[in-house]
Amino acid sequence: MISRFPWAPSRRSFLTGAAAAIFPLHPTWAVTSRTFILRAAPGQARIAPEPWGMSDVWCYGGKVPGPEIRVRQGDRLQIQVENALDEETTVHWHGLRLPNAMDGVPHLTQRPIAAGETFTYEFNAVDAGTFWYHPHQRSFEQVGRGLYGPLIIEEPEPVRVDREVTWVLDDWRLTKSAAISDDFGNGHDMSHNGRVGNTVTINGRVPDTFAVKQGERIRLRLINAANARIFGLDFQDHEPTVIALDGQPVAPHKPEGGLVVLGPAMRADIVVDMRGSPGSRVSVIDRFYKGLEYQLIDLAFDATPLRASAPDWPLTLPSNPLPEPDLKSAVHHDVVFNGGMMGGMVMAEMGGNMGDDSSGGMMGGGGMMGMMHSGKIWFINGKAAEGHIMEPMLTLDRDRSHVIAMTNATAWHHPIHLHGHSFRVIARNGQPTRHREWQDTVLMAPREKVEIAFVADNPGDWMFHCHILEHQAAGMMGVIRVA
Ligand code: C2O
Ligand code: CU
Image 1 (tube, rainbow, N blue to C red):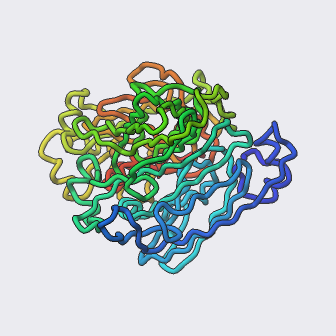
Image 2: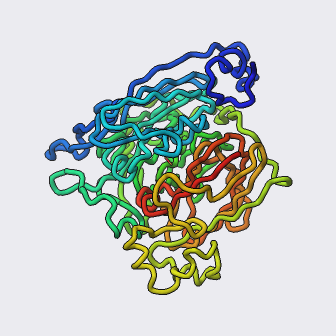
Image 3: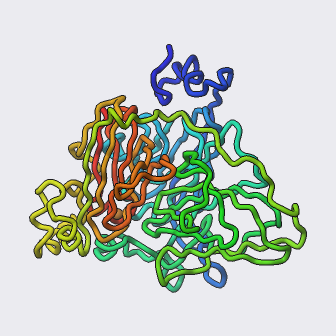
């Protein structure tokens, strides 16, 4: 039996036929099952350098980030999640196109995993790329305390590099004694730009230097696991080449304005040719927030070069089996995001009549404080989510192409994430994008309009939300049904 869907949950259909459907170029591939155990538990990690002590965290496998799950495209994953926390949890496999029941959304796709319980996730690695995993239950605190890890799916034929490195970026709010500040979900974070912290880490440590060699070519897999911080990385004269965004290959290009910009949950695979002279240092600077630039890490060049100049190996990744949306026949949908501090002002400036009216009346006047009191601060098409179960905000015809025109009618940035699908970002403020990049999380600037297009081929109820976890918790979340 050949299934129509590469992520069909039945093991038998996958083993007997679907592999050929996914990989027409490798019809003889054997499917490998890979088993992993992830234990979510309180632990300790050295986030801040000496002389600070260890910090209490919540983490997977006793460390931050959790263990790197690394498989090959086409493998079948079986991941047993043990919940040793004092509260319910789930694990969401961010960016993976998998069956709805494996998506890890509490109440919507599964019963939350109770304290002391175990749940086994099982799905196929359909797309190669850089992904990550994290809880979807009270994410603003669970992720903020350290529950997250990288999930790497290797291409059958990756681009040639000298070294491949994963950098999971995070941002912590630590007290003077290096404890995680426990003011999760406070009203100010919720209504402004989220929980932006004071300590940035790479792979769970405050970084110092990263040893490289002149002439070396490195593939860096960048993952932003922060609750709220947006990164804009400047590699100075080492301007990298972006080869994938959110795990999906993109035409190799230099980042716009020289900055690799990553909103929460976003990933970028970049190739950096190390051009510094032996013994020198080059700083990587985060320039996203104006006036708050800081040095993230130094590339420290070894005394001996690897080669005199950069190699000229090709940089184009093989593409993933994504269905191409047909814009001519696509169904059009409008989505408006509003709310937050200064939301009323932006709404007025943008015409003031966006979204349906269930919240519109409150946006202009003094209703803002009242809404914040009720914990509803952010709205999608006029509705604020109160939990994971809700009526779908959109129902998309399955196997059809859809365009969603999104308007950010707020004064803040929002990284908007759709579960279960990747979409092409086709236009920004009415202008076609250069690379029509596939993403699962798209960063919208204040007042920006962004159009995305995709084929709704994965049936189920899928979360659609801002990945600034405080915004998500304060209402910026909806459900899109594919049926
Ligand atoms: Cu990375 Cu709905 O999540
Ligand atoms: Cu947001």
